[in-house]
Image 1 (cartoon, rainbow, N blue to C red):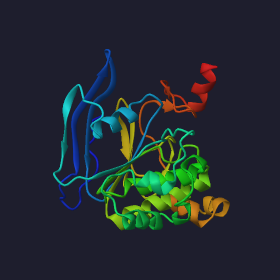
Image 2: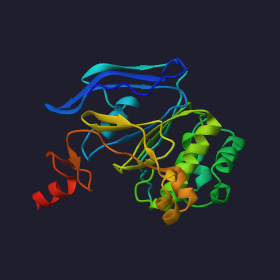
Image 3: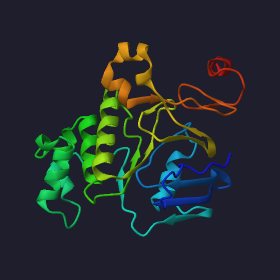
Length: 268
């Protein structure tokens, strides 16, 4: 399937274009014929099975991986803010949140204060990075990503290890940040079905783009509303896949045409 996302309703120039991207490692295909246009203010969520190429796609986009063939075209004004899945800190060298953010050269103290305030974590300024909770760490990494005022925010599995309520809060924060910065968002999700409700398009990648679509808004489901409440249902969406294979609960591909549950049982 050859899909170019996202739909460009305002005839805007893309921030980044990926054209016929192929990445091969030792004769093993990681990405095949990927075409993707990222437009200003778009919100894209990428899902897919483990080993499906999501990380390779991000590395290619961030110039950390050279494609075997194809072309990545960047607009002259693109500024990327990147939120990694996690960072490795030396526990023998404590560092405060403020000091960590000031490692970016040329920053003024006020710029750091503004980023902390924007993400409601000013109270963490003097806290040690090594002692932050998972949710606090994600907010600090997001604060670092917005310091250069990006027009494209790239997040690698920001909700991994966060419960469903925490996911809703983080999605709300990402959406608020996107609105304030007036930027595009490209997010990789570890969950194959639960995604950010504000995603304009969801892409499922398994070496190639298997399918693309929009999430179902769970706030339209009264049962979900009763179970989880207003905040969760407004910020979390459910994506239905449309391709000829199934995924197990662990994200692996099940190459049969019956239900995913049957496939899992068959493999046992």
